[in-house]
Structure formats: C-alpha cells, structure tokens
Image (cartoon, rainbow, N blue to C red):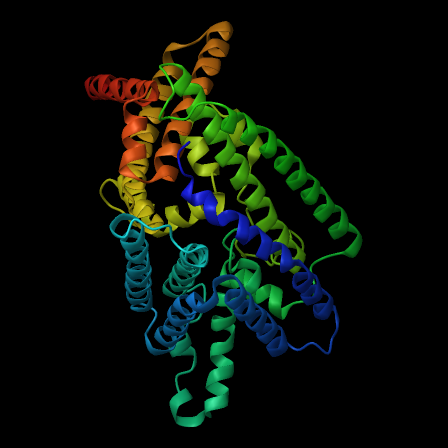
Length: 439
C-alpha cells in the first residue's frame, strides 16, 4: 500500500484538540462571570494557545511564535494600505521556507518527517489564514489599523499600554481553539466573542455538542470499516485495470472520512469556546460557516459545487484573497496559490492544476447540458452519470494531492483512473470551441 503522509499528522492533532476541550468549556464559564475582564479573556486564550503549541509541537512551536510576533509588529508599524502586502509576503515567505525544510527531509534525506514538525506546518498554514484575513480587514477598513488608531502612542503611551494594545492581535493569531484546526474565524467575530457575554446557552450547547460527538463517533466507526477494506485489498502498485478504480475510490473515501471527522472535532472545539455559535451574531459580522457539509459533498454531481463546499472556510478565504483580486485567469491563480500554500509537492501541483481544469470543464458541461437535456428521465440519467463521474474525478485528484511523491503519482497516471479526467479535458476542448462559435 502507498503511504498516506497527510493523514500522518491528523491523528495526533485530533488528540491535542480533544485535550483542549476542558479549557474551551472553562473559557465559556469564565465569560459568564462579570469578574473575568476583557484583558483576562485575551490572556487566557493566548496563554492556553501557547501551552498547546508547546505541547503539540515541542521546540518547533517557535516557528509559529516568530511570525505571529512579527505580524503584530507590522500591523502596529504600517498604514492600512501597506499592511496587507507586506504581511502577506512575510508570512508566505516564512511558511515556504518551512515547507522547503520538509522537502529537504522527504526528498533529499529520504527520511520520514517529525510528527511535531508536520503539526507545526499545519498550524502555520492556519496562521497564514488568520494573518491575511486580518490584514485584508485592515486594508478594507473593517478593522481599524493599529498604527492609525494609536497615532500618538509613541509620544504619550507607556510600554505596558502598547503591549495591552497589541494583546488582541497577538491573542487572535494564537488563540487555542483555532491553533491546530477549525474553520477560519474573522478578527471581528473573535473580538465580538471576547468582549461580549458568553453566547452559549448550557442546555442548547449540551445537545449541540452531543450531536457533533455522535457524528464523530459514527464517522470513526465507518472509518475503521473502510480502512480494513482498503488494507485487505490491493494497492496502486499491484492492482489491475478496473480494480485500480475501486482502489482509488475506496482510498479517497478513507481520506474524506478522516477529514470529515477532523473538521467536526475542530468545529466542536470552536463551538464549545463560543466562537462557532450562531447565537449573538452582531449586525454586519461575518457569518460562521463550518468546514464540513457532508451531505452536499457526497451527493453533488457538480465539481464546482464540491469545490465551494470542501473545507468551506478555506474556500471562502481563497476566494477573497486570490480569486476576487485576480484580473486574468482568477480560477487558475486561485488553484496555483492553493498548491503553493499547501507546500508545492509534485502531487499537489499536479492535483490542484487538474482540479482547476476540471472546474472549468464542469461549468461548460453543465451549461450545455441545461440547454440540450430537457426530458425528466434524461435529466435523472444525466445527473446519475455525472455524479459517479464527479466522485471518481475527485477521488483521482484527492489521491494525487495526498500521496504527493512522484513515484506514487506515476502509478496513478498509469492506471485506468486517468480516463475520467481525460474525458472532461476532451469535453472542455470540444465545448470551448462550440461556445466560441455561439458567441
């Protein structure tokens, strides 16, 4: 069987996320008490976040602390029009250097990377989301620029006052419910939760968390069954013809179950701490969207819809950061950046570029189908066939992204699985020419 490097660090992350639950519930309880000041809340989130980072990452935690500290310094030093560009360049440069360290270990030294280092890289990627989300908010005027808000700070403020002013930003970048996973929480939402009363009603939150816990338990049980089936069968190295299609589909199913379970756990931790609750949302505040919409992901026959719903907060972040800023080929720019953000492993570069082409083909195919397929039975048949084709294409892309190495990617290329994206590529070429004629 092939190696599964991405799943390698999801299990230890889940353990640390589970260990953080008592602190999340304690934070909510303390928020109910009037004596727990705003500064104390910021400090609680920061201190527990720092302790969690050290416990999960060991000495590698410094690789997360340094960019967080540098981001706060940049935010307090730059104006609103400059802060996003410079913080983005610094954060992505730092993250890329860390990913190059992983490349050096895996491809040059031919050694398995440290689990703690993999957890650190995962946390760094989430930190990049928060850093860029905050800097975009400052540039767009949704959050007051720290440098402008404290115009006279250097002349009339003491060091302690400057540190208290930087505390909300530092706490946001390292707050423990989102340190190792979870949907992206905006700075506005974070600040509203910390400064406001607890948003959880004990009775409602108990049942909501119980429901999430049962969902996670069900996914874990299903994952055990799927893992046994995958382990008992052939791998891509020894499968034959159509058997390779089943191997790819079942292995991708195991990946998806792992991510669904992980996302639900992350969502539950944020909810327990009060940051994922739908209650108490202030007017104009960015809505909360959980990462896992399992029903849509498993039933859709549209690759484009799957793309928007897969890891929803990250998809929305990429749309805001790259797609809406791009003037030429915004879809391609978005997937290229996503490959860069994930680490630029060979499988990731191929997988995300393939994904971009498949989304473009998906738009054209379904546009033409809506025009030419009229009868009800034909629409049912069309939807059934495109659902199966969509699931097989996405399984192909998922394996390409997850296996990462060139040797495993070569096995995937030479299997029957390559037929499915090839069909969409041919349809894209044919329909693009027809679209040009119609225009």
